Length: 344
Image (cartoon, rainbow, N blue to C red; front, side, top):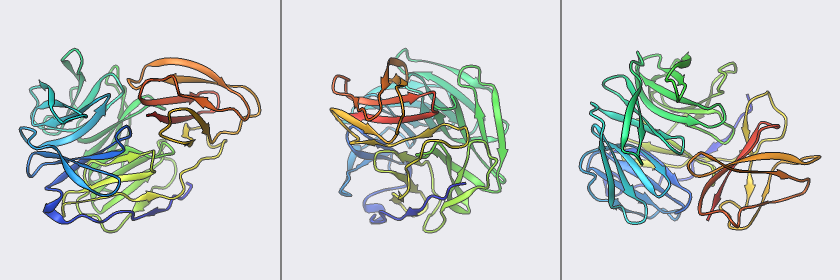
């Protein structure tokens, strides 16, 4: 497994003055900020790139756990409900009661939301536009906590709570279990995907961030092994190449930087991400993908749906100037490479 070096970028929090029980972090590429849900005071904070922390939602109406961006709305798990808050001003725009016991992790594929019910050991599928929901997985057996959608492998990864915690994957249409891997970690809280499509999990025992390849055929790697205190629901910021870690045990948020996040063409037959410059962008973008001939790609829009296709020529650039604001995925299926580009 290729080693990635993580360096501590930020440990500049001052306890309760900034965060009160930080549970989940979500990077907002359009606003270039980090949302942080805080369970001790029912709030959601926002952190700017200069480190300034301010209120986004003063009172979510209950303790907010997992949070997830979808378009111009930040969704939050609050008790048994999923609530939506407008990213421009923090006002609540939706409140859907799922009748769940304890909604914890939250992710999206661009159209649906997927959330774990920690207490009932279920996974629910939510259509926030239609205001409907259904049970995707009726019994996860192990206690589900964090959840993340994998666009390359087209599945949901779920991190489980408990000793020798499992990492499981599910089909997002049928809810069928696709894989289950038993780790030596205790109480995995958060899960996300890094710049290479590898799985990062946050565990409480030990308190660290561990990396696994999706095939689980290579040894696990420790990427952040010190300075964490009950790390919770993590996110990966693929613009600044940092992992967003809320330390629920000491009321801090840290952003360890990935210093080596470029990937060469080739590899072991798994999907990998590539870099784009500049990113975010409003014009032409250069991608870190040398090609010897015309290379076709698919373009996935902010909702995760196919919105176009094209061909990248040798030495060519991708033009995003005519696209609406949002996050797009250019999928070079023939090379098993993809890149996320934020149109600003």
